[in-house]
Image (tube, rainbow, N blue to C red; front, side, top):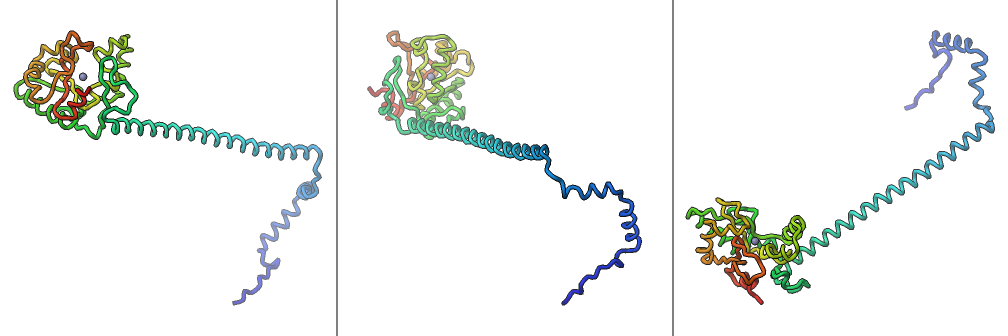
Length: 280
Ligand SMILES: [Zn+2]
């Protein structure tokens, strides 16, 4: 299909438009016509040349400067990223180590820590996976055998009208770190004084998942006080705890360097717990 060539002629412009173009052209002053033509012949004067050069140099400087700044920003960002990555890896490393310590080192024989410190025996931290919550408080965890025994004890005591409760079971080394050093500093105690009533971190029976602190819920003010021995809960424990394989860890003993703790008891109802607490 062939397209006929477009033949534009003056006749294609409407009469009115032709008239107006002519009229406008006629009206343009000579000066205006001259100004319109002038840029084509515009010579570069020394001042304008200098200005143009400054502009070019300025732009180049700006581009260079921008690159330098953005390089610095990128470098800083990479640096920060590097630091974050490094510290994240350190954290990952240390938590992996902590896990290895808590899971793999059940006897503590691989540790360089002394087997006894300030009259407290060293105990490995039980793995969280090896612990279960007790019935009366899901936040308190123990080894399954100890937890089963505690659940029976509390149920029996309660059925006899005694408000026996447990306020502390498994405790991590980090928790004990605060209980020993944090409280020691708060009270201005010496290490020896603090160790009479609290084990240094790594040396608490609570790390094993076999030890508990009891309370008489009708007399909460006797918690961790010697006056706990005056409560019905304590009397019940003295009469019944052995039937559930629990014994008092720090009984009244004038020859012992450790304080009497009538509230703190440990489970000794299986081979593992017995070895932990009695192995020489
Ligand atoms: Zn305790």
